[in-house]
Amino acid sequence: MKRKDLLGIKDLSKSELNEILQSANAMRETIDRRERLTTLAGKQIATLFFENSTRTRNSFDMAAKKTGAQSTGMSASTSSVQKGETLIDTGKTLDAIGFDAIVIRHPASGAPRVLAENVKASVVNAGDGMNEHPTQALLDVLTAKRHFGDIAGLKIVIVGDIKHSRVARSDVLAFTKLGAEVTVCAPYTLMPVGFDGMGAKVETDFDKAIEGANVVMALRLQLERMDQAYFPSIAEYHKYYGVTSKRMLRAADDAVIMHPAPINRGAEVSGEAADGENSLIYEQPTNGVAVRMAVLDYLLGGAK
Ligand code: CP
Image (cartoon, protein in one colour):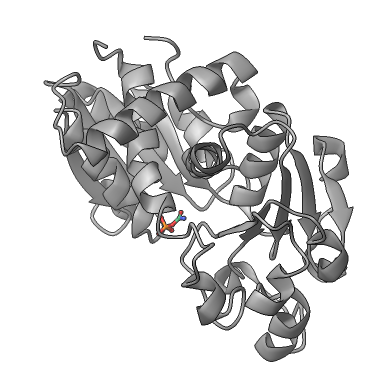
């Protein structure tokens, strides 16, 4: 076991990031060869999701299968939290049942850390409120690294709903630790304070921010977290902040488009751009499985 939990990119050193990425790249090669590993045979993984998910949950399930582990899914509606049990009591029960790892997604920032401090099982943060989504950042970095070869020196622009995005936080931390130059871009209403302190440049004009970028990462408008109107209409948002083939002409010649998804086509990205030749959007979920295989292996100590 290299560390007990993965709660955020904030906690990882550059060498830990590189070690996980190197392992994830090797895992990706096993996926491409359609191999199944047995390195985590006998390990039991619980996925405890208190928010919707398509990619992350299925990706952890697939990662468990591909490493020989078994995963058991629980959701807020089927867990005893619905009956009034605390998250800590649920966690202690999962410990006692014999789970080696708990993968948790929760609307409250910090919930995975509270769980980790109270259970013996490894805890993996699969997204907590507006805080972090570390495995998404790892898969985003892996996708860029596999495409460009190195992260250091890349110009990354992250555009969209920065305010509500746990992906933006984890991505900025991961890409800057590895030497990329990151710019976050959003209308004033969707730009929180503090990103410059994390090492990112802050820009509200997307046409300026995209200039010369190698990676253009669009983020989802998190309408479910918006309690007021942050922009006049989706059409206006798309006009000024949408990733389109025309706007991509301002980026570097080798620029690629990424998006953690789910995508709102015609809002964050035009359909044409999302499906274009320079889109890596459908490469990201495959790398997500590889990253989660590597993370489970890192935490649970699978044989190499
Ligand atoms: N990117 C991401 O976290 O997707 P899901 O919400 O589908 O898990």
